[in-house]
Length: 213
Image (cartoon, rainbow, N blue to C red; front, side, top):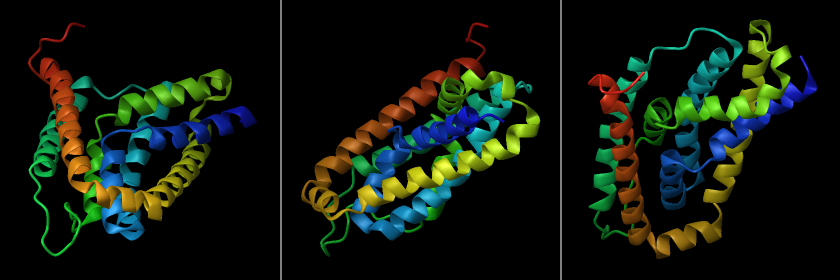
């Protein structure tokens, strides 16, 4: 295995996590509103999804048969409804009289786990990111190299998660968030519903047989 392939897998995993998306917005709200510990639980749960999607992406890149599109269409449909539910709750959230965060997630690990597994950017973004950064070493891409690539990717995920937890738990970030919490939460709710509409828009045609081959 070449050094460029190892570095490429690490950077692909790093960028995959740091690319802004629904999970990033959720982490911002949880971490800034409830602290680094809650944010760490969220990204720990999300890590499961990161590993699943990166594994599928690497398998597809190496040359195995990809999972049928119906699986991803069904997943996209479920994800769309889930994101719509979260977005509506955020948009309609009301200020708490006791000074607590506007949106308080009681089980951040479970929320992160669901986000990670149903993340609409999961497979396509993982596939695009890993392809862009490891395609240059295509000759070294074999199934025997898969375990090491996954291990390197795992290190990239952990590194990115540490960076995110450090940022969202910073005092300046938390103060800014709490000062503009209601506006940020409502805007995030609108964005979540936008992500939901996008997921439903892409999933429905395939399930109804409208998508062209």
